[in-house]
Amino acid sequence: VIDATSLGWGTRVKGFIACFAIGCLCSLLGSCLLWVPKKGLMLFAVFYTLGNIASIGSTLFLMGPMKQLKRMFEPTRLIATIVMLLCLTLTLCSAFWWHKEGLALLFCILQFFALAWYSISFIPFAR
Image (cartoon, rainbow, N blue to C red):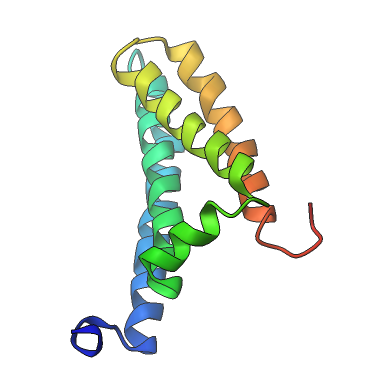
């Protein structure tokens, strides 16, 4: 079963590139939609968050889902992971349920810093 479901290295790299490109495209599209009257800020928050989720998800192709989850919740990066996931969730909550555009923008900014902190946690001695 393990051999039948595992991906080759070339397929993993292609999946990573495709998922990361979709994430970058969503983030760029969100930035362009920021200037749409009335709903622009909410569209920005949603597309920016979806872009970040896709970009994080792209690493699943390189490491595999279980190894990615184990590394995300290691004690050295546990706080960074929780803050990042919390910011992603709060951005979507403020856009969809609370309908607070200013709060969504604030969480997008916090999301950027949380994602940077999370990414830096994978570089040895960078923190």
